[in-house]
Image (cartoon, rainbow, N blue to C red; front, side, top):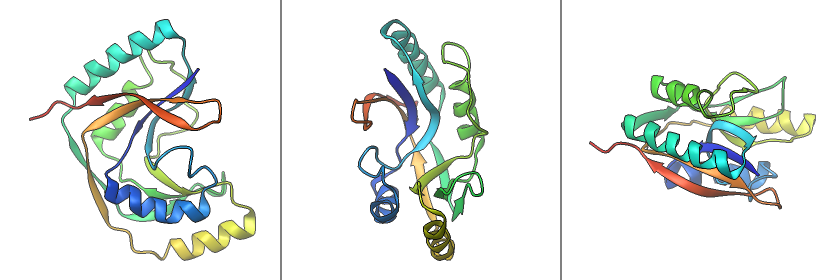
Length: 170
């Protein structure tokens, strides 16, 4: 079974992202807006229990932290994906690193670029139109991250939360 680890932002941030995703993201219905900490990976039941224990330990060591989302950006020319850029923070970087060591499968597909996807799988002309208009959009979102989620993929390729790990509360 495939699993992934993500941060789901507040309803306010999700509403902003979904207003655009409804139109520009064919995977809109498969998972809510999120920041991926660890991309999809295969895991059997025996490893899952070890991963859950490690995620509990990590969450107990992390305090809630703020993130800023200052603009729309893109992964072009690599892919025609448009996203809300999440300013990197030491906390995000450390969480991402911890998801790629120890009991976790180590492979990383790409460098970590914290973001919330708002458009993907666009054909070239559509991508240019969408990105040209969205990059002019004023974006000034802030949020507090206080939990991470272990998610799993269903047969229809949608994602569900398997477990949630709340950060140490002050």
